[in-house]
Amino acid sequence: MHSAVAINNQIVITEIPEPQPQAHELVIKSLSCGICGSDLHCVHHAQQLADNTQNIVGRSMMDPKAPIAFGHEFCGEVLEPTKSDPRFRAGDKVVALPFVLRPEGVSLIGFSTPQLPGGFSERLLVDSRLTMPVPNGLDENIAAMTEPMAVALHAVNRSEVTNNHVPLVIGCGPIGLAVIAVLKMKGISPIVASDFSAARRDLARQVGADVVVDPAETSPYQSWQHAAATDAQCRFGPTSPLFGGDGLRPSLIFECVGVPGLIQNICAGAPFGARIIVVGLCMERDQMIPAFPILKELDLRFVSFYSPEEFQQTLFHLAEGELDVSGLISDIVPLDGIEQAFDRLSRPDSDVKILVNPQR
Image (cartoon, rainbow, N blue to C red; front, side):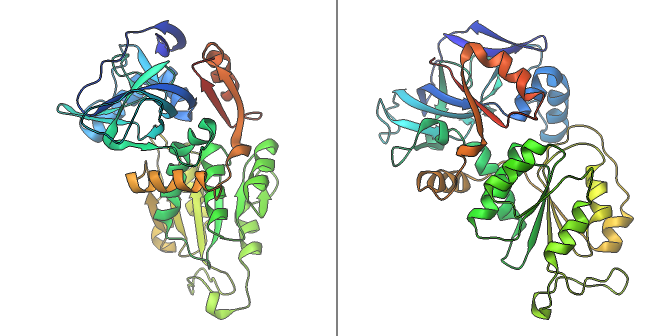
């Protein structure tokens, strides 16, 4: 079958073996699969990612010397059910967490060898215990957005946002826009968003940002202060004799870029007592001056992935129309258009999320 894999720092379409399911695994036909920023990074920096996961997790999550089969944001159709899980029948439309649980350990779908193909393959394997039926006749392209939107839902849940907070989202790429959409769904306002790209600032407005800032012209932290100003003392956030804070609602800052130096930049610009949620995945060495978060008593929280419950909640929100992500989908391309799609996404001014249909 055909599959998109990374070989020698290039994304290519090649023939790979048909997937062979083990216990608890379903064979599904890939209907739609989103291209993630981590896919782009992995094409050119697979060795770095492998080394980092070895250091962090204790074992490498991929073999950079072997072809890497991509695609972890997918929706598919069940082709071969498993006797161990009678919930699923052939023809069922499903989404799944991108993991398989095997006796030798957990493997990550979308960053593995062709023996465990990803969503950019015509067919792939999923773990039935981590698989969910797509409800309400939800379109497969919207259903494929479950995984990245679950990342955003988890980040917002970890932030413990309340109606009193005024969020500031730094970076309006796919994850930043997803965070804005989730905050909007929860009824939080005003939401301040910052990005250098005019196109992404426009998208931020579309998905729910109330104040949108070009950081090349205006400080996002000053814009936040204007949006967070209040005369109601009962709504004041943390205050400090050294840094003040009277007249401002509590600050909640989402770092959604993941480049070196940005966490320190946010610590320098954040008000006293701000809660900072680091969602952007920086795989390089970084440094910061601890005196900034110490003296400002900043609360730094780092997030990744999601729980199975959050994944299921995200699918429900999409199916019920409570979470509108249609504006984030820039294009849908066939499998043989994936190389051009990767190139387009490396220049992010025009595209946010490109989906691949391996059956076209």
